[in-house]
Image 1 (tube, rainbow, N blue to C red):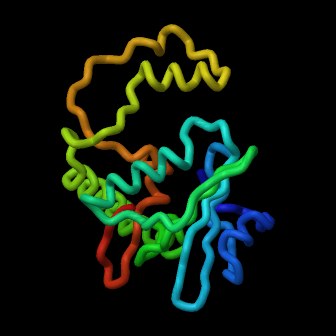
Image 2 (image 1 turned 30 degrees about the horizontal axis):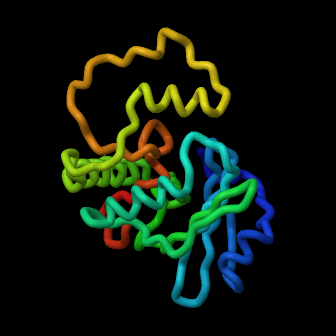
Length: 191
């Protein structure tokens, strides 16, 4: 996942989802998707457009966002859907700025602290016992097989579970930076 290094064409499909918005690509994901920021007067939204057939679906992301919203701040889902080749998700913007923005990269210590504080908040607020989602090894292997991916046998057996936690799929290595938020007045958070 990364910030686009070059201009990204804005598909007509995205323009149709947020008519009249000033659009710019802000994030490229590993599944070939792009997230666009759309601004209109006092309104900011984000539009994720990704090819169908990836490891996760927009419908699953919507379910997780709606569940998490009962416990912590997450973007509101405005609209989601798909066609034969792509899926999309339109969410509200949240106060703050990405930890991998120009400001965040100029102040890496503050950005790392924002990510860490946000992850701590995430793990403290989301109840493990009430989480209706799973993502264990056998499910991931089955999902990979369904997409035609051969998983080596040595990866089929998971180590014993030490402690269950509610995870966010986007918070490993550099991916966490997309969710770290630098808020005004130096406060930190994650979404």
